[in-house]
Image (tube, rainbow, N blue to C red; front, side):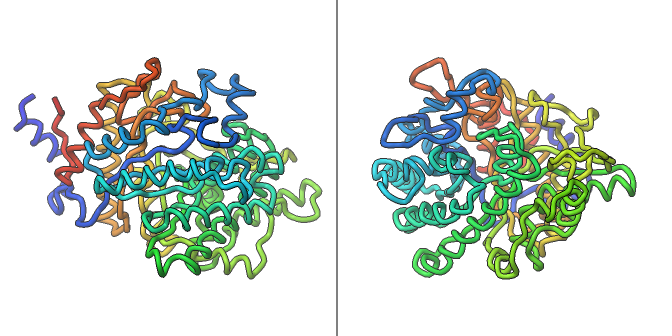
Length: 491
Protein backbone atom coordinates (compact mmCIF):
# COMPACT_ATOMS: atom_id res chain seq x y z
CA UNK A 1 0.00 0.00 0.00
CA UNK A 2 1.45 3.41 -0.91
CA UNK A 3 1.74 6.33 1.50
CA UNK A 4 -1.29 8.18 0.09
CA UNK A 5 -3.57 5.23 0.72
CA UNK A 6 -2.12 4.74 4.18
CA UNK A 7 -2.82 8.40 4.97
CA UNK A 8 -6.42 8.11 3.78
CA UNK A 9 -6.92 4.97 5.86
CA UNK A 10 -5.43 6.73 8.86
CA UNK A 11 -7.79 9.71 8.58
CA UNK A 12 -10.83 7.50 8.09
CA UNK A 13 -9.90 5.35 11.07
CA UNK A 14 -9.78 8.36 13.38
CA UNK A 15 -13.30 9.51 12.69
CA UNK A 16 -14.59 13.09 12.72
CA UNK A 17 -12.95 13.99 16.03
CA UNK A 18 -9.50 13.73 14.51
CA UNK A 19 -9.96 16.89 12.48
CA UNK A 20 -10.19 18.98 15.66
CA UNK A 21 -6.61 18.34 16.74
CA UNK A 22 -5.19 15.85 14.23
CA UNK A 23 -3.86 13.72 17.06
CA UNK A 24 -1.08 16.14 17.90
CA UNK A 25 0.14 16.06 21.49
CA UNK A 26 -0.41 19.14 23.66
CA UNK A 27 2.32 21.69 24.21
CA UNK A 28 4.41 20.73 27.22
CA UNK A 29 3.32 17.08 27.13
CA UNK A 30 6.17 14.80 28.25
CA UNK A 31 7.23 11.47 26.78
CA UNK A 32 9.30 8.91 28.64
CA UNK A 33 10.11 5.29 29.18
CA UNK A 34 10.74 3.23 32.28
CA UNK A 35 12.34 0.31 34.12
CA UNK A 36 12.64 -0.82 37.73
CA UNK A 37 15.69 -1.75 39.77
CA UNK A 38 15.22 -5.49 40.29
CA UNK A 39 14.07 -6.02 36.73
CA UNK A 40 17.15 -4.54 35.04
CA UNK A 41 20.05 -3.86 37.38
CA UNK A 42 21.42 -7.31 38.17
CA UNK A 43 24.56 -7.14 40.37
CA UNK A 44 22.46 -8.71 43.11
CA UNK A 45 25.35 -9.09 45.56
CA UNK A 46 27.69 -6.44 44.17
CA UNK A 47 28.43 -3.00 45.49
CA UNK A 48 27.30 -3.69 49.05
CA UNK A 49 23.68 -4.44 48.16
CA UNK A 50 21.63 -6.49 50.60
CA UNK A 51 19.14 -9.26 49.87
CA UNK A 52 15.60 -8.30 48.84
CA UNK A 53 12.40 -10.33 48.76
CA UNK A 54 12.80 -11.14 45.06
CA UNK A 55 16.32 -12.43 45.61
CA UNK A 56 14.93 -14.73 48.29
CA UNK A 57 11.88 -15.86 46.32
CA UNK A 58 13.66 -16.60 43.04
CA UNK A 59 16.51 -18.44 44.78
CA UNK A 60 14.40 -20.53 47.15
CA UNK A 61 11.25 -20.98 45.03
CA UNK A 62 12.33 -20.91 41.35
CA UNK A 63 9.38 -23.18 40.64
CA UNK A 64 7.13 -20.15 41.07
CA UNK A 65 8.79 -18.37 38.12
CA UNK A 66 7.55 -19.43 34.69
CA UNK A 67 11.03 -20.05 33.27
CA UNK A 68 12.71 -20.51 36.69
CA UNK A 69 14.90 -17.45 36.06
CA UNK A 70 15.87 -14.58 38.33
CA UNK A 71 17.23 -11.04 38.36
CA UNK A 72 20.76 -11.87 39.50
CA UNK A 73 22.20 -10.43 36.27
CA UNK A 74 19.07 -9.33 34.38
CA UNK A 75 20.00 -6.60 31.87
CA UNK A 76 23.17 -5.77 33.84
CA UNK A 77 22.13 -2.12 34.03
CA UNK A 78 24.25 -1.70 37.15
CA UNK A 79 27.25 -1.84 34.82
CA UNK A 80 25.58 -0.68 31.59
CA UNK A 81 23.57 2.33 32.76
CA UNK A 82 25.30 4.59 30.24
CA UNK A 83 23.99 2.36 27.44
CA UNK A 84 20.52 2.65 28.93
CA UNK A 85 20.75 6.43 28.92
CA UNK A 86 22.03 6.32 25.33
CA UNK A 87 18.89 4.40 24.35
CA UNK A 88 16.76 7.12 25.93
CA UNK A 89 18.70 9.69 23.93
CA UNK A 90 18.15 7.66 20.76
CA UNK A 91 14.40 7.57 21.44
CA UNK A 92 14.36 11.31 22.05
CA UNK A 93 12.26 11.01 25.22
CA UNK A 94 12.12 13.84 27.74
CA UNK A 95 12.30 11.65 30.87
CA UNK A 96 13.41 8.28 32.16
CA UNK A 97 11.56 6.65 35.02
CA UNK A 98 13.68 4.26 37.10
CA UNK A 99 13.44 2.91 40.63
CA UNK A 100 15.92 2.91 43.47
CA UNK A 101 16.68 -0.36 45.25
CA UNK A 102 16.11 0.03 49.00
CA UNK A 103 18.67 -2.69 49.93
CA UNK A 104 21.23 -1.07 47.66
CA UNK A 105 21.00 2.00 49.91
CA UNK A 106 20.40 0.33 53.29
CA UNK A 107 21.33 -3.37 52.90
CA UNK A 108 19.05 -4.49 55.75
CA UNK A 109 16.49 -1.72 55.47
CA UNK A 110 17.37 -0.11 58.78
CA UNK A 111 18.76 3.42 58.72
CA UNK A 112 22.34 2.63 59.65
CA UNK A 113 25.37 1.49 57.66
CA UNK A 114 24.50 3.60 54.62
CA UNK A 115 25.88 1.89 51.52
CA UNK A 116 27.71 4.76 49.83
CA UNK A 117 28.61 2.64 46.82
CA UNK A 118 24.95 1.99 46.08
CA UNK A 119 24.09 5.65 46.52
CA UNK A 120 26.94 6.56 44.17
CA UNK A 121 25.48 4.30 41.46
CA UNK A 122 22.21 6.25 41.43
CA UNK A 123 24.04 9.56 41.62
CA UNK A 124 26.02 8.64 38.50
CA UNK A 125 22.84 7.51 36.72
CA UNK A 126 21.12 10.80 37.51
CA UNK A 127 24.14 12.80 36.38
CA UNK A 128 24.31 10.84 33.14
CA UNK A 129 20.64 11.53 32.45
CA UNK A 130 20.95 15.23 33.16
CA UNK A 131 24.10 15.51 31.07
CA UNK A 132 22.05 14.20 28.16
CA UNK A 133 19.10 16.49 28.73
CA UNK A 134 16.81 13.79 30.16
CA UNK A 135 14.67 14.36 33.25
CA UNK A 136 15.17 11.71 35.96
CA UNK A 137 11.91 10.41 37.47
CA UNK A 138 12.68 8.28 40.52
CA UNK A 139 10.42 5.69 42.11
CA UNK A 140 11.42 5.21 45.74
CA UNK A 141 9.83 1.77 46.10
CA UNK A 142 9.15 -0.70 43.29
CA UNK A 143 8.53 -4.00 45.11
CA UNK A 144 12.00 -4.88 46.44
CA UNK A 145 11.85 -4.42 50.22
CA UNK A 146 14.97 -5.69 52.05
CA UNK A 147 14.54 -9.28 53.19
CA UNK A 148 15.60 -8.35 56.73
CA UNK A 149 12.54 -6.09 57.02
CA UNK A 150 10.33 -8.77 55.49
CA UNK A 151 11.54 -11.17 58.18
CA UNK A 152 9.91 -8.76 60.66
CA UNK A 153 6.63 -8.68 58.71
CA UNK A 154 7.54 -6.27 55.93
CA UNK A 155 4.64 -4.01 55.01
CA UNK A 156 2.38 -5.66 57.61
CA UNK A 157 4.59 -4.32 60.43
CA UNK A 158 3.65 -0.72 61.41
CA UNK A 159 7.33 0.03 62.09
CA UNK A 160 7.96 -0.15 58.32
CA UNK A 161 6.62 3.42 58.12
CA UNK A 162 9.57 4.80 60.08
CA UNK A 163 12.08 2.72 58.13
CA UNK A 164 10.62 3.90 54.82
CA UNK A 165 10.79 7.55 55.90
CA UNK A 166 14.46 7.27 56.84
CA UNK A 167 15.23 5.55 53.54
CA UNK A 168 13.46 8.34 51.64
CA UNK A 169 15.26 10.98 53.70
CA UNK A 170 18.69 9.82 52.56
CA UNK A 171 17.50 9.92 48.94
CA UNK A 172 16.20 13.47 49.27
CA UNK A 173 19.41 14.52 51.06
CA UNK A 174 21.70 13.11 48.40
CA UNK A 175 19.72 13.16 45.14
CA UNK A 176 16.97 15.71 45.67
CA UNK A 177 19.05 18.57 44.32
CA UNK A 178 18.88 16.88 40.91
CA UNK A 179 15.66 14.82 40.95
CA UNK A 180 12.50 16.91 40.66
CA UNK A 181 9.97 14.13 40.06
CA UNK A 182 9.52 11.53 42.79
CA UNK A 183 7.07 8.62 43.00
CA UNK A 184 6.89 7.21 46.50
CA UNK A 185 5.42 3.79 45.73
CA UNK A 186 4.60 1.86 42.56
CA UNK A 187 1.40 -0.21 42.32
CA UNK A 188 0.30 -0.81 45.92
CA UNK A 189 -2.27 -3.38 44.82
CA UNK A 190 0.45 -5.58 43.36
CA UNK A 191 2.52 -5.19 46.52
CA UNK A 192 -0.26 -5.92 48.98
CA UNK A 193 -2.98 -7.88 47.20
CA UNK A 194 -0.70 -9.97 45.01
CA UNK A 195 2.34 -10.25 47.29
CA UNK A 196 0.79 -10.51 50.75
CA UNK A 197 -2.72 -11.60 49.81
CA UNK A 198 -1.85 -14.29 47.29
CA UNK A 199 1.22 -15.73 45.56
CA UNK A 200 1.42 -13.66 42.37
CA UNK A 201 4.30 -11.53 43.64
CA UNK A 202 6.98 -11.73 46.32
CA UNK A 203 6.86 -12.42 49.23
CA UNK A 204 3.98 -14.74 48.20
CA UNK A 205 2.41 -14.99 51.65
CA UNK A 206 -1.04 -16.10 50.47
CA UNK A 207 -2.93 -14.48 53.38
CA UNK A 208 -5.76 -12.81 51.50
CA UNK A 209 -8.26 -10.75 53.45
CA UNK A 210 -5.87 -10.07 56.32
CA UNK A 211 -2.23 -9.49 55.30
CA UNK A 212 -3.18 -7.50 52.20
CA UNK A 213 -5.26 -5.04 54.25
CA UNK A 214 -2.55 -4.68 56.91
CA UNK A 215 0.00 -4.10 54.16
CA UNK A 216 -2.15 -1.47 52.51
CA UNK A 217 -2.82 0.37 55.75
CA UNK A 218 0.87 0.75 56.55
CA UNK A 219 1.79 1.48 52.93
CA UNK A 220 -0.63 4.41 52.71
CA UNK A 221 0.69 5.83 55.97
CA UNK A 222 4.28 5.38 54.76
CA UNK A 223 3.51 7.21 51.52
CA UNK A 224 1.89 10.09 53.40
CA UNK A 225 4.78 10.34 55.84
CA UNK A 226 7.30 10.60 53.00
CA UNK A 227 5.16 13.21 51.23
CA UNK A 228 5.02 15.30 54.41
CA UNK A 229 8.75 14.85 54.93
CA UNK A 230 9.39 16.28 51.47
CA UNK A 231 6.78 18.99 51.79
CA UNK A 232 7.99 20.20 55.19
CA UNK A 233 11.75 19.80 54.80
CA UNK A 234 12.78 19.75 51.14
CA UNK A 235 10.19 21.30 48.86
CA UNK A 236 11.20 24.92 49.35
CA UNK A 237 14.88 24.29 48.58
CA UNK A 238 14.54 21.47 46.03
CA UNK A 239 11.33 22.57 44.28
CA UNK A 240 10.27 19.07 43.24
CA UNK A 241 7.02 17.13 43.06
CA UNK A 242 5.91 13.92 44.76
CA UNK A 243 3.36 11.52 43.30
CA UNK A 244 1.86 8.08 43.88
CA UNK A 245 1.40 5.44 41.16
CA UNK A 246 -1.61 3.08 41.06
CA UNK A 247 -2.24 0.24 38.65
CA UNK A 248 -5.52 0.68 36.82
CA UNK A 249 -7.79 -2.03 35.46
CA UNK A 250 -11.04 -0.91 33.86
CA UNK A 251 -13.94 -3.05 35.13
CA UNK A 252 -17.11 -2.94 33.06
CA UNK A 253 -20.53 -4.52 33.47
CA UNK A 254 -23.30 -5.42 31.01
CA UNK A 255 -26.42 -4.45 32.99
CA UNK A 256 -27.52 -2.20 35.83
CA UNK A 257 -26.74 -4.90 38.37
CA UNK A 258 -23.43 -5.66 36.72
CA UNK A 259 -22.58 -1.96 36.51
CA UNK A 260 -23.03 -1.71 40.28
CA UNK A 261 -20.66 -4.64 40.72
CA UNK A 262 -18.15 -3.12 38.29
CA UNK A 263 -18.21 0.18 40.17
CA UNK A 264 -17.72 -1.66 43.45
CA UNK A 265 -14.75 -3.45 41.93
CA UNK A 266 -13.30 -0.15 40.71
CA UNK A 267 -13.63 1.24 44.21
CA UNK A 268 -12.16 -1.83 45.91
CA UNK A 269 -9.31 -2.24 43.42
CA UNK A 270 -8.38 1.32 42.45
CA UNK A 271 -10.25 3.41 45.00
CA UNK A 272 -8.63 1.38 47.80
CA UNK A 273 -5.53 3.52 47.10
CA UNK A 274 -6.88 6.59 45.34
CA UNK A 275 -9.70 7.45 47.73
CA UNK A 276 -7.55 8.03 50.85
CA UNK A 277 -5.14 10.28 48.92
CA UNK A 278 -7.09 11.97 46.13
CA UNK A 279 -10.72 12.23 47.30
CA UNK A 280 -11.97 15.24 49.25
CA UNK A 281 -13.32 12.91 51.96
CA UNK A 282 -10.20 10.81 52.41
CA UNK A 283 -10.34 7.37 54.04
CA UNK A 284 -11.12 4.09 52.31
CA UNK A 285 -14.05 4.03 49.86
CA UNK A 286 -17.33 3.69 51.80
CA UNK A 287 -18.39 0.63 49.79
CA UNK A 288 -15.13 -1.10 50.67
CA UNK A 289 -15.57 -0.40 54.37
CA UNK A 290 -19.16 -1.65 54.23
CA UNK A 291 -18.46 -4.89 52.37
CA UNK A 292 -15.39 -5.90 54.37
CA UNK A 293 -17.11 -5.10 57.67
CA UNK A 294 -20.24 -7.04 56.73
CA UNK A 295 -18.30 -10.12 55.66
CA UNK A 296 -16.05 -9.89 58.73
CA UNK A 297 -19.08 -9.86 61.01
CA UNK A 298 -20.56 -12.90 59.26
CA UNK A 299 -17.25 -14.71 59.82
CA UNK A 300 -17.34 -14.01 63.55
CA UNK A 301 -14.80 -11.18 63.75
CA UNK A 302 -15.46 -8.59 66.44
CA UNK A 303 -14.30 -5.83 64.12
CA UNK A 304 -13.64 -5.39 60.43
CA UNK A 305 -10.53 -7.03 58.99
CA UNK A 306 -9.98 -3.75 57.14
CA UNK A 307 -8.00 -1.58 59.60
CA UNK A 308 -9.53 1.74 60.55
CA UNK A 309 -7.84 5.11 60.12
CA UNK A 310 -8.23 7.62 62.92
CA UNK A 311 -9.69 11.02 61.99
CA UNK A 312 -6.20 12.46 62.33
CA UNK A 313 -4.75 9.82 59.99
CA UNK A 314 -7.46 10.49 57.40
CA UNK A 315 -6.49 14.16 57.32
CA UNK A 316 -2.77 13.30 57.33
CA UNK A 317 -3.07 11.06 54.25
CA UNK A 318 -5.60 13.14 52.30
CA UNK A 319 -4.07 15.33 49.59
CA UNK A 320 -0.58 13.82 49.81
CA UNK A 321 0.23 13.75 46.09
CA UNK A 322 1.16 16.42 43.60
CA UNK A 323 0.13 14.13 40.76
CA UNK A 324 -1.39 10.72 40.17
CA UNK A 325 0.67 8.10 38.38
CA UNK A 326 -1.51 5.69 36.42
CA UNK A 327 -0.25 2.36 35.10
CA UNK A 328 -2.70 0.90 32.59
CA UNK A 329 -2.52 -2.32 30.63
CA UNK A 330 -5.87 -4.09 30.44
CA UNK A 331 -9.57 -4.25 31.29
CA UNK A 332 -12.02 -6.84 32.58
CA UNK A 333 -15.73 -7.56 32.47
CA UNK A 334 -17.49 -7.77 35.82
CA UNK A 335 -20.68 -8.98 37.43
CA UNK A 336 -21.93 -9.47 40.95
CA UNK A 337 -21.17 -12.84 42.54
CA UNK A 338 -23.14 -14.22 45.47
CA UNK A 339 -20.41 -15.94 47.47
CA UNK A 340 -22.12 -17.68 50.39
CA UNK A 341 -19.05 -19.20 51.98
CA UNK A 342 -17.15 -17.78 54.93
CA UNK A 343 -13.71 -17.97 53.36
CA UNK A 344 -11.53 -15.06 54.46
CA UNK A 345 -10.34 -13.44 51.25
CA UNK A 346 -10.34 -10.22 49.28
CA UNK A 347 -12.49 -11.78 46.54
CA UNK A 348 -15.06 -12.97 49.07
CA UNK A 349 -15.18 -9.43 50.43
CA UNK A 350 -15.84 -7.64 47.13
CA UNK A 351 -18.36 -10.19 45.81
CA UNK A 352 -17.47 -9.59 42.15
CA UNK A 353 -16.64 -12.06 39.43
CA UNK A 354 -14.41 -10.65 36.68
CA UNK A 355 -12.98 -12.01 33.46
CA UNK A 356 -11.38 -11.01 30.17
CA UNK A 357 -13.82 -10.67 27.29
CA UNK A 358 -12.59 -13.20 24.71
CA UNK A 359 -13.80 -10.92 21.95
CA UNK A 360 -10.93 -8.60 22.83
CA UNK A 361 -7.54 -9.23 21.23
CA UNK A 362 -5.36 -11.31 23.55
CA UNK A 363 -1.64 -11.23 24.29
CA UNK A 364 0.89 -13.84 25.38
CA UNK A 365 -0.05 -13.08 29.01
CA UNK A 366 -3.18 -14.85 30.29
CA UNK A 367 -4.21 -11.81 32.36
CA UNK A 368 -3.98 -9.38 29.46
CA UNK A 369 -6.80 -8.56 27.04
CA UNK A 370 -6.58 -5.42 24.90
CA UNK A 371 -9.24 -2.73 25.34
CA UNK A 372 -8.06 0.82 24.50
CA UNK A 373 -11.54 2.24 25.07
CA UNK A 374 -11.28 0.98 28.63
CA UNK A 375 -8.20 3.18 29.01
CA UNK A 376 -10.20 6.27 28.03
CA UNK A 377 -13.06 5.27 30.32
CA UNK A 378 -10.68 4.76 33.23
CA UNK A 379 -9.18 8.20 32.73
CA UNK A 380 -12.66 9.72 32.78
CA UNK A 381 -13.55 7.73 35.90
CA UNK A 382 -10.54 9.24 37.68
CA UNK A 383 -11.41 12.74 36.52
CA UNK A 384 -15.00 12.50 37.73
CA UNK A 385 -14.26 11.00 41.13
CA UNK A 386 -11.09 12.79 42.15
CA UNK A 387 -11.59 16.37 40.98
CA UNK A 388 -9.57 16.08 37.79
CA UNK A 389 -6.04 15.55 39.14
CA UNK A 390 -2.91 15.89 37.06
CA UNK A 391 -2.20 12.40 35.70
CA UNK A 392 1.01 10.95 34.35
CA UNK A 393 0.73 7.62 32.56
CA UNK A 394 3.67 6.00 34.33
CA UNK A 395 3.37 2.62 32.55
CA UNK A 396 1.65 1.35 29.43
CA UNK A 397 2.93 -1.52 27.34
CA UNK A 398 2.49 -4.84 25.59
CA UNK A 399 3.98 -8.31 26.30
CA UNK A 400 5.25 -10.75 23.68
CA UNK A 401 7.98 -13.38 23.39
CA UNK A 402 10.64 -10.88 22.31
CA UNK A 403 9.96 -10.25 18.62
CA UNK A 404 12.10 -7.62 16.88
CA UNK A 405 9.38 -6.96 14.30
CA UNK A 406 6.81 -6.28 17.02
CA UNK A 407 3.96 -4.84 14.99
CA UNK A 408 1.37 -5.92 17.56
CA UNK A 409 3.13 -3.75 20.14
CA UNK A 410 3.03 -0.84 17.70
CA UNK A 411 -0.72 -1.37 17.27
CA UNK A 412 -1.14 -1.44 21.05
CA UNK A 413 0.76 1.81 21.58
CA UNK A 414 -1.03 3.56 18.73
CA UNK A 415 -4.52 2.65 19.90
CA UNK A 416 -3.83 3.50 23.54
CA UNK A 417 -2.22 6.82 22.68
CA UNK A 418 -5.23 7.56 20.48
CA UNK A 419 -7.60 6.78 23.37
CA UNK A 420 -5.52 8.94 25.70
CA UNK A 421 -5.59 11.89 23.29
CA UNK A 422 -9.36 11.53 22.98
CA UNK A 423 -9.56 11.73 26.76
CA UNK A 424 -7.35 14.83 26.79
CA UNK A 425 -9.01 16.80 24.01
CA UNK A 426 -12.62 15.58 24.05
CA UNK A 427 -13.07 14.79 27.76
CA UNK A 428 -10.70 17.39 29.26
CA UNK A 429 -8.75 14.87 31.32
CA UNK A 430 -5.51 16.35 32.67
CA UNK A 431 -2.93 13.89 31.34
CA UNK A 432 0.50 15.51 31.44
CA UNK A 433 2.82 12.75 30.27
CA UNK A 434 3.13 9.22 28.92
CA UNK A 435 5.60 6.46 29.78
CA UNK A 436 6.16 3.47 27.52
CA UNK A 437 6.83 0.31 29.52
CA UNK A 438 9.51 -0.66 29.15
CA UNK A 439 12.79 0.67 27.82
CA UNK A 440 14.10 -2.87 27.28
CA UNK A 441 13.22 -6.52 27.80
CA UNK A 442 13.72 -7.38 31.46
CA UNK A 443 12.74 -9.74 34.27
CA UNK A 444 8.94 -9.80 34.21
CA UNK A 445 8.38 -11.04 37.77
CA UNK A 446 6.57 -14.40 37.92
CA UNK A 447 6.85 -14.71 34.12
CA UNK A 448 10.63 -14.37 34.19
CA UNK A 449 12.01 -13.58 30.74
CA UNK A 450 9.29 -15.50 28.89
CA UNK A 451 7.19 -12.33 28.62
CA UNK A 452 8.92 -9.25 27.28
CA UNK A 453 7.73 -5.65 27.19
CA UNK A 454 10.82 -3.88 25.87
CA UNK A 455 11.24 -1.30 23.15
CA UNK A 456 14.73 -2.77 22.91
CA UNK A 457 15.48 -6.46 22.64
CA UNK A 458 18.05 -7.76 25.14
CA UNK A 459 20.02 -10.88 24.22
CA UNK A 460 20.10 -12.70 27.54
CA UNK A 461 22.26 -15.48 26.13
CA UNK A 462 25.14 -13.06 25.64
CA UNK A 463 27.11 -12.07 28.76
CA UNK A 464 27.39 -8.55 27.31
CA UNK A 465 23.59 -8.23 27.23
CA UNK A 466 23.52 -6.32 23.90
CA UNK A 467 20.43 -4.17 23.24
CA UNK A 468 18.77 -3.98 19.81
CA UNK A 469 15.98 -1.55 18.89
CA UNK A 470 12.71 -3.17 17.89
CA UNK A 471 10.25 -1.79 15.35
CA UNK A 472 8.29 -0.33 18.27
CA UNK A 473 11.34 1.70 19.32
CA UNK A 474 11.45 3.27 15.85
CA UNK A 475 7.71 3.92 15.99
CA UNK A 476 7.84 5.51 19.43
CA UNK A 477 10.85 7.59 18.42
CA UNK A 478 8.88 8.99 15.48
CA UNK A 479 5.93 9.88 17.70
CA UNK A 480 8.22 11.67 20.15
CA UNK A 481 9.98 13.51 17.30
CA UNK A 482 6.85 14.66 15.47
CA UNK A 483 4.61 14.90 18.58
CA UNK A 484 1.85 13.34 16.50
CA UNK A 485 0.42 9.88 16.01
CA UNK A 486 1.12 8.22 12.69
CA UNK A 487 -0.17 5.03 11.10
CA UNK A 488 2.62 4.90 8.54
CA UNK A 489 4.48 1.61 8.81
CA UNK A 490 8.18 2.11 9.42
CA UNK A 491 10.60 0.38 7.09
